[in-house]
Each structure stands twice: as C-alpha cells, then as structure tokens.
Image (cartoon, rainbow, N blue to C red; front, side):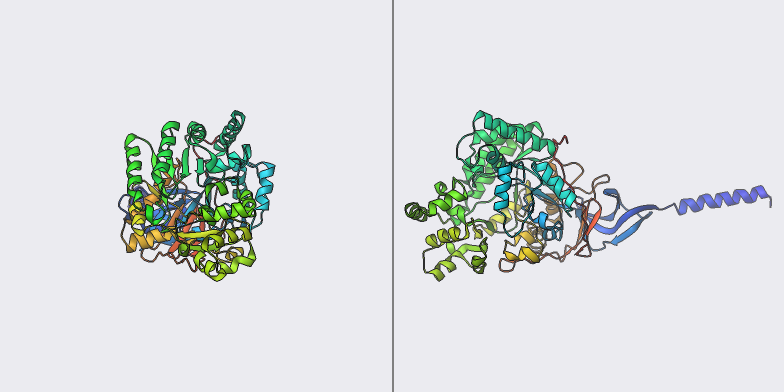
Amino acid sequence: MSKQYLLCLTLLWAFFTACENPEKTTYDIVIRNGQILDGSGKTSFTGDIAINADTIAAIGSLENAVGKAEIDATGLSVAPGFINMLSWANVALLEDGRSQGDIRQGVTLEVLGEGSSMGPLSEAMKQEMKNGQGDIKYDIPWTSLGEYLNYLEEKGISTNVASFVGNATLREYAIGIEKRPPSPEEMETMKNLLRQGMEEGAVGLSTSLIYVPSGHADTNEIIELAKVVAEYDGMYISHIRDEEGGLLEAVDELITISREAKLPAEIYHFKASGNANWHLLDSAITMVNAARTEGLAITTDMYMYNASSTGLNVVLPAWAKEGGHKSTITLMENPATRKKMMDEIDFHVPPENILLVGFRNKELRHLIGKTLAEVAEERQKSANETLVDLIYEDDSRIQVVYFSMSEENVKKKLKLPYMSICSDAGSYTNEGVFLEQSTHPRAYGSFARLLGHFVRDEKVISLEEAIYKLTTLPATNLKLKKRGALKAGYFADVVVFDPKTIKANATFKEPHQYATGMQHVFVNGGHILKDGEHTGTFSGRFVKGPGATK
C-alpha cells in the first residue's frame, strides 16, 4: 500500500471524524432542557440557553455546546427576569442591595418613582429627607435622580433599577408644599429639571395625585410636563386622582393627558377601591379600551392582592392634608379644627378592615397587627378620634393595609391584555432592621402569587401569558433596549423556577416570609440566586430610558 494511499485514507478519516464530532462551543453558562417561555406569550418549548458574560449567547438545542457551569432545568420553567412596574425598594436597597424579597420571586428590574423620586433634590429637600428617615439611616451624597441610580449601582445591588421622575419632587423643588399653580419661572424650573432627569436616563414622568404635593398639580400643569417627556420618547404613569367614587373622572384625566401630550400613559395599580365602588371597574375598563381603540397607548399594572396599603391619613378630609404633614399636625393641635377633622373623616373602608402595619414611634409598635377598630375599642374611643390620636402620637401618616377590593375584580383585571404586574412595596430581607415594622405581603409575594395561585391553582390565565405580563409587555411599554425577552443578544436577565411548586408564603399576619420555588436568577449574567439561595452577587445596573443622552 503506497504512502500516498495511506495519507488519503488518513485525511478522509479525519474529515469524517470532524463531521461526526464537531468542536464544541464553550459558554460561561448553559441552562439545559428547560421549558422555555421567551416572554412573547407564545407556546413554550423545551430547549437550552447559553450565557456569555452579561449576554444571552444562544437559544435552542445546544448539543454541541459546553458550559463552564451547567444547570439541568429538566421539569423547570426558564423565562426572562421579571419587571416590577411599581417598586418602593429605593430606600431598602440603600440598606441591603440584595433585594431578597423580590429576587426570590424572580424580579430582576425594580422600576422606582411613584409620584416622588430620589432626585432632583435641593439642599433643603435633602435635610427634610434626613429628618424624615425612619429605622433605616442613610447618607444622601447625590442631588439628581441619575446620580442616585448610579450611586446604587456603584454601591452594589442585585437587581437592575430604573426610575420615573416624580412630579411631587419637581413641585417641592420649585414651589414647596403650597397648593397653587406654578409661576412661569417655576414651571420652567420644573421642565428643565425634568429634561435633566430624562437625559440622565429616567423612563418618564410619574404622579401620585391623591398625595401632597403631587395632587396640587392640575391637569394642564401635568400636560405641560408630559409634553417634555414626549420629546424623549418617555411615558406618563400615574396613581390617578381617585380610585373610589371619582374613578371614572380620574381615568378620563389620565387619558386626556395622554391625548394632549401625545405620549403613552399607564395607570398604577388599577383598581376600584371600596365596596360601594367595585361596580365602577367595568366602566373604567371600557374607557381604557375605547382610548386604545382611538390609538392611545394606555396601559395598566396591578398587584396580586385584594387589599391595598398606604397611609392612615388618606381618610382625612382633603383640607387637612393639603399643607403637608406638618400642617396636618398643627391643625390637630387646634381643638376646633381637630373636631372638624374628626367629623369629616371618610371611612371608604370600615375600621375593622384597616390593619395597622407601620409606626415611626417605637412606643406604638405593640399595635402592629391590630385593626383600627380593635385599637379604638381598647382605648374606649370612637374610630375617628382614635385615628386622629394615632397620627398625632406617631407624628407620621402611619402605614396601614386597607381590605378594600373585590377578588372577582382582581381576576378580571388580570385578564386584560395590557396589564403588567407590580408589588407597590419595598424589597426586604426578613431579618434585622426590616423586622422593626410589619408590611403588606405583596412585598414578598406578588409575583409568586401570580404564578402559583392565579396561574397554576386558579388557572385565570396561562403561564405563557403571565410571563408576557411580567417581561416583554412592561419592557416594551418602557421602551427598554435588549430587556424583557429571551433572545440571543439580549442582556442575560434569566429566571429558572418550578411551576409546580412556586408559592407566595407571606401572609397579612406574618408577611416577612420569602416566596419559594424560584431556583435560579441571573441578572446581567450574574448568578444571584443559586438553588434557591442568594449568592451575594451584585450585578444589577441602572437601566436607562429611551431618551438618555448621558
């Protein structure tokens, strides 16, 4: 046999061997055999996902891939990281950047800034913020909103963060707490500050119109600010002016702002609050649908409970709140205005359905977990007088839970195709300073409750639709780049969970309990949650809106 013939045989063998055993591609991480829900709402499929650095590198059947680390996701669901459309984690993240309560549910992006934001701040506002700090104490080295978000990233956070600019913050900077229209100069100041925020990376303008001073702004003022946001392709989002008897007028105001300013608008935690108002939800939905048919990009978000949480002071008459908290306390010290205030309290939720969960005064914290009715009975006073006394004694608005919504309406809202999901709460660790106060279970359970209770148990919507509402829908509304979907080239915000066991364990009596069933969470490729436990990794980033220039 000639040498040439042997050489040919050798080359042919090498060629066919290479074809049969192609060289494997190495990735940082390969997640194998998972039920992939890509965020689009389309039917899931079984496949693999490869991650390199902070990016999804490949999706599909990756037999010829090898990971430096590999996860067997057989029997598990793999999805984009969840987006919390209304988060109050802004202070909690300063204390503990791990964002445990939300990470353990799969949240990889906290969207901050409901009505008020962590910037822009004047020196007087910084001092006021320091004076108002509760159990968590923190420095304020930032001035603008962008500086705050960069500060969080540099300090170390496990979740991504984004934020709206709050109109209350703009108003306080330019006007203070006064209830009056801005002067032309003050309006220009607010517009310039808003432009700065949008260029730094804010995703839009927010209002919270049942609170002071956000609600001091009239519709035209908001429209003028919203027009600035439209220049940067941002969004307007609002805790609308009334979620009770005036719900339809409040929805109409938001739609008007969207129409006049020519920008998308979203209703925060869309609801009809108070038993007497539950029937208004159908009409509110009809109004939103009509606006969308008109061509307006109106969307909504919600949390997964039939109880809300805010200040006990919201039931006080409007005149008692319009000057801000210090003014309210002063009015309580005058016997005549105190009596008038008590007489005009409007309990849209009965006192037996108002749960006390947070006090500033440590001497009052033994009342946490009791209803207002129970405390009134203990003190042998009326609920009206007890309410005023508590606010005065605590020198705060007092955090409470209102059992005010219909479970049937919760399910009805969840089915809306334009409904995203939020917690409307902080993201806490169930230890240390966070245990000084109670909270609403939505802080630990809103997202897990969606997937466990409403999807798996109640079958209100499909798992694919739920993941769409948690990921692609809010990312699209916010116009975020390369977020909210499982696609090659997108940032590797990825979650792996067990759809058969995921569960919210937090209750109203014992809210500081982590959800279970989330196995792995990646944020920008960083492995934050591994086998259900936090790794201490901080790979979260400041995610900027579409108008960012800095």
